[in-house]
Amino acid sequence: QLQLVESGGGLVQPGGSLRLSCAASGFTLDYYVIGWFRQAPGKEREGVSCISSSGGSIDYADSVKGRFTISRDNAKNTVYLQMNSLKPEDTAIYYCAAGRGLPCSGSYYTTWYDYWGQGTQVTVSS
Image (cartoon, one colour):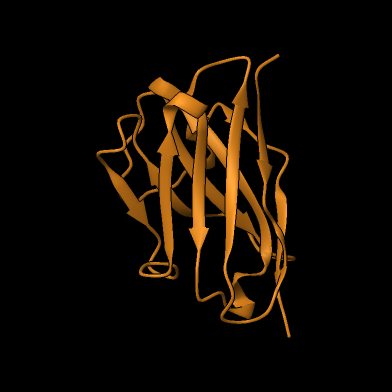
């Protein structure tokens, strides 16, 4: 069964950090662009960051640029999202998604991605 599983979410105070993981099972992530998305209550799902299959192309939404870092370890079949200086407005369910042959350069269309994880809740609150 092909699936992505996110982990690492939780409750953190403003200014704190979390590292999300996106692990694949049933397929290898080597040939896939991985995107991180988030969805806050009452809002549409939005793209946060993406990384190309080689890791050579990376993009961040303006809202997280300078605070979030995406990386991948193909040997572990896992992609990470390091989130620093978290703000209350970062509160959302975070999803990872995988797709092949996609650009990773500023556009995040959910329909481009073939596989999605179930999401992990991130809550930033004092």
